[in-house]
Image (cartoon, rainbow, N blue to C red; front, side, top):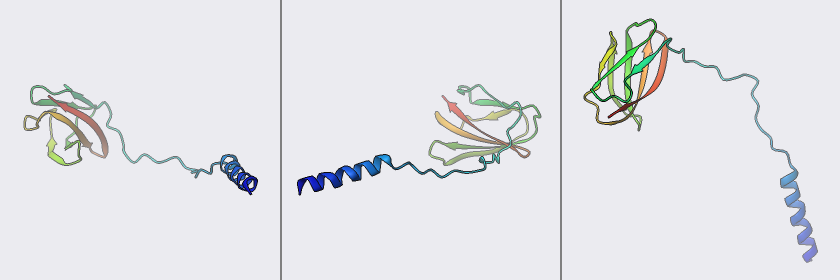
Length: 112
């Protein structure tokens, strides 16, 4: 009786180990829907003076959304130049979502 259970247990273990893993394969690579912003530059980062400068190759009008690390929106602004006031933000880490025309980018911003 003991040998019978031992045999069944060893057979079960063998089937678990010997069975190949089955993975779902995809024929297509995921498509990137976000068009990057050419020459995007955000400085200074970390921000210490309450001003951050955002520039790009085209320097068109930008829509900026700032989120805290919990994903809560804290500021939304339309940037026509390069200088953005962030003096109202408390020190911490934020996520910038920037849109310039159809191009979009997401960056981290540290405010000290």
